[in-house]
Image 1: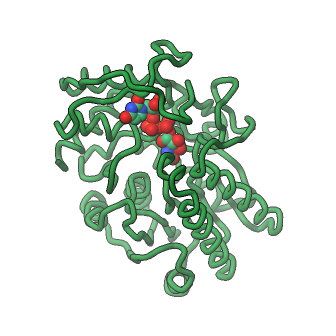
Image 2 (image 1 turned 60 degrees about the horizontal axis):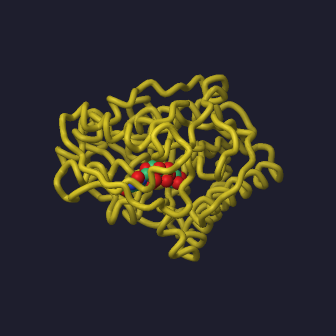
Length: 332
Ligand code: WQD
């Protein structure tokens, strides 16, 4: 099978490309480097010792996307490309709606016109909003509190309507929890082009001396130690989930939703503590005000993905912390 990976030079995209190549798939990657770097292409090739076709450009560019589907015999698509920073989306909603929705509409139109109707979509646990009950199951109520999350929820709705209009589509919507960690080689990892938004990139800036101390956004949440609890999942486990999704959709039609999480929640201070212990590095922190829009706790019930995809996260928090640190130390 030949898989088109949009955003394949990004954090999760690049790790998924490695797993796809090592799983025997042919891949084609399209990326505009808006939140990734060109050198990732060679890193993927170095890790896998495999080659693949790369197209630089924006998934919103219909001419480019038609060119790719005309030139390449694509069997299925994994769609990562999109902006993903919650805070940025609040400041620039129009940019987020234009980019994330437009790219998906263009992709689906071009897929349809080339009779390619197998799609894995990168969604997010953020579509669950502030869950009333934990752990979170796929049939929980959906709501969003920021434009980034709203683009994900809107795209889920668009994909559902596409399937309703044409039952020959096969769509897997993967709702990620909190991806951290990096490939064991240390060659690829989370390397945002600008100011990080997420916890682990900030911890890594403190670990490498680029930041004096970590701001812990609130310690008065309704959690074990008052700091925010999230379901952190190793990016390699998450990437393997995409191969399981491809296996699921390649011989079936339908649309379904899968939580890709570990089912275990860790607080901010637990992450800091684990990171420090595993890597023998002190992470200074100070308690800061809550970040607007943050929720107390969020973690998955991953049993449906296990049952339907035969997928379970295998790597523990220590490995996530060790692999994150190895990457940042090799790529200072
Ligand atoms: C995790 C915890 C913060 C930074 C978001 C998106 C989600 C997905 C992952 C894209 C929270 C705390 C963080 C810091 C801190 N992104 N924190 N100090 O907000 O759970 O999820 O990123 O798909 O869709 O919503 O992740 O890493 O930003 O925060 O205390 O400097 O760390 O308050 O409790 P979040 P995060």
